[in-house]
Image 1 (cartoon, rainbow, N blue to C red):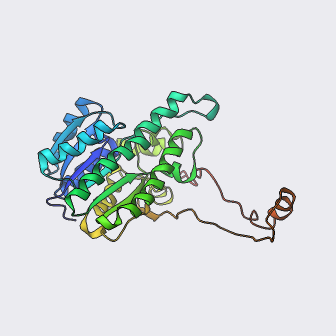
Image 2: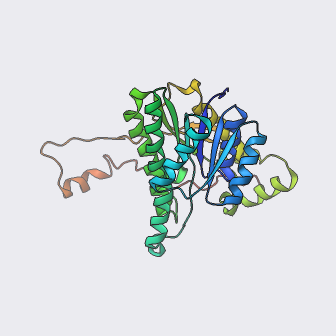
Length: 303
C-alpha cells in the first residue's frame, strides 16, 4: 500500500498500538505527527517512525481539549504542508465497578477518549474540507464498546460513543470525500497481559519470540500490535475511498465487520402495548431470543 505524499496525525502514539500505527503509516510512505503526554515517549516515537522510513514530528500534549487538537493539525500543516489522515488512538483506563467508580474516573476517560476524538476529528475535518481533496478519519473502538465489559462503565461508554460518532461523521463528511471508519483492534498489549486466560501464553511468546498460539490468534483474535496495522494502513489509503461508516475488527488472524445495531424482531399490536400485554407476550415474542452482553470468556486455553 503506497501512502507517499500523505500526511497523518496519530494521537496517543508514544507506545503500543499508536506507535505501531505510526510506524506502519511511515513504512508505507506517509509523514506522521506523533503525540503523547510523555515527552520522552514522543522523542523515542519520532526516532522509531523515522527509522521505519517516514518523516516525523512530535507533539507532547494531552488529548481532550480544542487547543491540543488544533495544535496537532497545525503542526502537520506547518511541517509537512497538509493533512490527509487522522488516527484517534489516545486513551486511558480507569477501571472500576459501577459502585466504586468516581466522578473523576468517569470524566477523565470521557475527556481523553470521547472528547479527544471529537475535538481532533473536528479540527481535522475542518482542515481536510479546506484542502478540498478528501481525507481519512480513523477512530479507534473496542470490543468493550460493542458488547460491554465488567468494570469498564466509562471505557465501554466512550468506545460505543466513538463508533456512533463515526457513523454520524460518515454522513456529514461524505460530500467532502472524507471517509470515517472505526477500527476495533485486539492485540497483546499491557492491558491484555493482565487477563489470566491470556497472560501465560503472552509471557511465553515474549520469552521465546514464537507467535502466539493458534487458539489465541484465531478464536480470540489476539496477536501482536503489528497484526492490526494493516487495516489502519488500508483505511488511510486511496484504495479505501468507497469504505465509510464501518466498524471493522482486526487482531491476530481475524478480520471482521461488526454489525450496526438494528431491530432484531418486531411485533405490532393495534392500540399499542401496556405493561401487562408486554409481560404476557415477551417470552414467546420479541424476547424469545434475548441478546447476549459482555465480552465472551475465552473458549480455550490451548490445553
